[in-house]
Image (cartoon, rainbow, N blue to C red; front, top):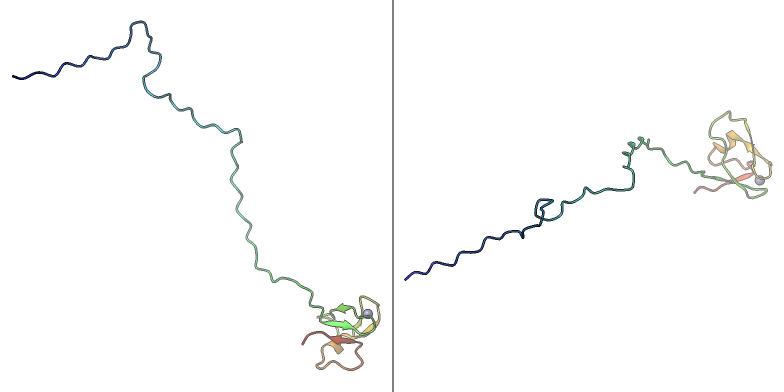
Length: 111
Ligand SMILES: [Zn+2]
């Protein structure tokens, strides 16, 4: 004796219900952002590797104690004055001698 399984009832919509959209989950709305689209960033300008300029202040004025740097270029007889007290420290050539002459009114701070 075989018993056939009972036939499943076919699901049917109730009469009077109108199908306005395909059955299934609600269609997703496209994501919207209030922010305007970000413009693409301009490429970074190529930065040249530049040595950091830092004052060395290799000398110290004897009269006032101000730190300063003698001119690295220029004539040797160029008068070098202290930026702090305007004292005549010496001439540029004196700073280029090692050791510096005693008449130089500045002390080298470099060791
Ligand atoms: Zn000085």
